[in-house]
Image (cartoon, rainbow, N blue to C red; front, side, top):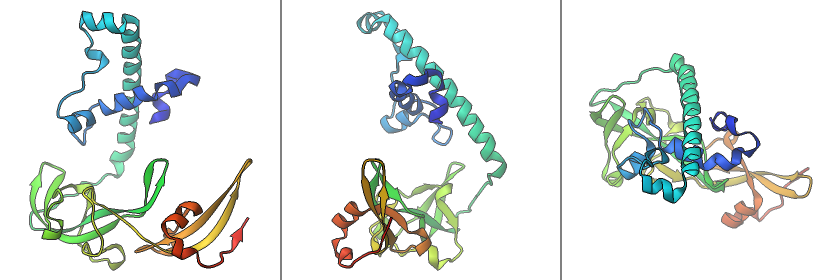
Length: 246
């Protein structure tokens, strides 16, 4: 999506990233029924397209207003093209999932591995808690769940994509009493064991990495993490010699 939005700006594309972010946050999203900005702040954003006031144009400069408006319109058109293309790809494989009041479902929670990559906490494969009973249908794609007191302060309406029909599968279910579920339906997974160590050699430096096994996850789901970060959080797991693979 980002690549499509900056096609018109050539080598200076990074100068327009803030406009791409602005345009995306103020574009209508079908799943939300409004723009993300309006969801967050409860009102539409007063964008450059609204700067019709003569006084504002004098203060900001008519050239700046005109140029910004044209760039936002370019990005907006690109966004529409990308979203339309994504929809055409998704529609053939999309299946409508519906539940009835009284059905029991699992709720998907996202385990976070406790480390930050590029400013965002790393995610592991999702797990499910429950089952919980559906007590109400909110619109065409959302349902209200009967959550237990331990989760009672969490928002109890969820999109259908986060629900799964109640079919027992012990390898993908965790007890919600065992881990603290956050308000955004995530929890932090704990590191169990270090499987391997590797030294990544770049042109000007070397980066020590460790392959780690996370709780509630299989060995195939192990991830590579920075050794320095893992040592800081889990020093007790570094009391033995690991094989170095160059």
